[in-house]
Amino acid sequence: MWAAAHDWRSQPSREGKRSEGRRRMAGWGRALLPPAALLVLAPLVLAPDPYGEDCKSKMYPPSGPTFKGNVPTYIINLDLPPSKRWDELMRDKKTELKTVVQNIKDIANTFFPSGKIVDIVDHKISHLTETLPYPFNEELQGIANSSGVPLGEIVIFNIFYEIFTVCTSIVAEDKTGKLYHARNLDFGLFLGWDVKNNSWTLTRELKPTVVNLDFQRNNKTVFRSTNFAGYIGMVSGVKPDLFTLTMNERFSLDGGYVGIFEWFLGRRDGMWMGFLTRAVLENATSYQDAKEKLAKTRLLAPAYFILGGKNSGEGCVITRSRTAALDIWDLDIKKGTWYVLETNYDRWKPPLILDNRRTPAMKCLNQTTQENISLPTIYDVLSTKPVLNKLTVCTTLMEVYNGHTETYLRECPDPCSPW
Image (cartoon, helix red, strand yellow):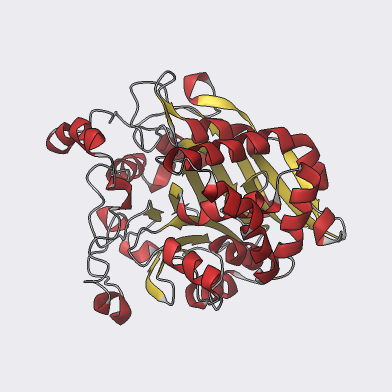
């Protein structure tokens, strides 16, 4: 059973070994806290997790204090011109989008009171839209037009998801060979702590923007996803009867900041993570085709791609640098690996001690056993603190058959880990 948690004999590729020294501090980005915060958190390093709890059970169907609400569904018509595809969604969600964007601007002005950063975004960044690939450039322009949010701010809103998404993703196979894929989407780290409400401001304000999207062509579903209104990339999606896909941020010194900075300076041979996942969901023709594209395409930022298929054994975590796959961890039922799980740390390294969601999630999966695994029991795992935490915006449950997707807004009642 524990082989499912970690196959320590699997090692990263040769490139991963060469880069080990350079990335030795990978994953510590979330620890870059102000000194005062470190003083508060230091005792946690020496004590048992104060926010941990026994594995939850019978949390599904969602209800009670951890359930914040259901999520609406919108159709994105791929037969429309790119600039018009998001009009209906923006008509309904532009107020919520403006609230989130204003929050990001307020945070920027806190660190740069002169207002120059926001001015650069509004007047300089918008011109970079022309350098983005079709149809994404035109879609961003269309969202700006229909929402009334300046184009530069829409671009920055989309960039944020390349560098601030922290999550827990699981692909599991039951005894009959049926595959399940689920994730907690955690977002908003260090982006404004509300002392009064004991919550992350941006996390709270993002929840009303969460939507399920049904991308259609010729009135037929091409793929489905869970998104934030205004974001055109994909962090969670399913291509019916072919594969499921989620994306998690991978912390690295050679991270998203570097790739985005290079893009600004004119080097544009890497692909935005969210654009790649969307292109894969839209165009890949099989699990293997998706796996190859996710493993080999050059990226702007390192990432984890968690992929599930439709046949027994089709599930993996692809650990990516910006240029190559460092490791591919596959389901292997014969060896006892009936699930793969990814948070935001390389599986051959221990997670950051202040952010160990991996161990409690693995403990709950092993406690559940393969015989009892299902979407409801995976929801239980994702409802257990600190897997569920103050950053958790929503939980998405997916099955590849017929493209089944469920998404629920979440709340983590106190006491609850800030991440």
